[in-house]
Length: 272
Image 1 (cartoon, one colour):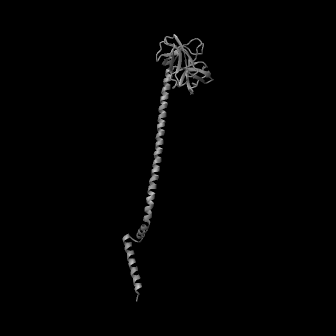
Image 2 (cartoon, helix red, strand yellow):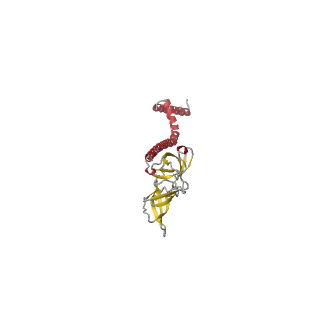
């Protein structure tokens, strides 16, 4: 006869077996039951991993998207730069065509022959105002010859090689230009004071008719550096030193010295 302890163990075994059968039936079979049990164990860890990984994924996705935005912005800036360059080149070409058109008819040089030359290098400073041109002795360009552009005198040739020359601009501090204005009865000397400074004239008689905008032209006196009649500068302002009988005059060049691409070298030498 079975002991009470054995009967209790047998009853517990039957009970556990019944519970296992119920779980298997409800969960859809042995494999599904194993998966369910495993899920109960793994699920807390899975939630923790997702909780950590999901924000990291968002950060990585955000970094990739930001990189795309930066790249697109750089491409747009490059396109804008190309468009701006093309616009500036078009404007420069338009100005050059205008200069070439204007220098074919320069009434103030009379019948003097001339050589048209492109600018090869410009290096003006407050102390030295010079430009280089791509014409030289082989083209008849010699030191001392006047140079005009953009409606007026811009300087004269100070040195030349076989295929190039250097021009000192009228703004050069050592520039001296004999000029006249009005009816031509008054003669003055205009001097340069540097690239960003106005031209200057002194010893202009108070009896002379002088007002803002008055044009000063080369006087062409014997022994002068320039032939007569070339526009040089226009009056900006005048001042009088107390007790003086003359004006001091501030002037601006008639030629636009900031935008020179071509010049005309007059085939003329002092004393001719």
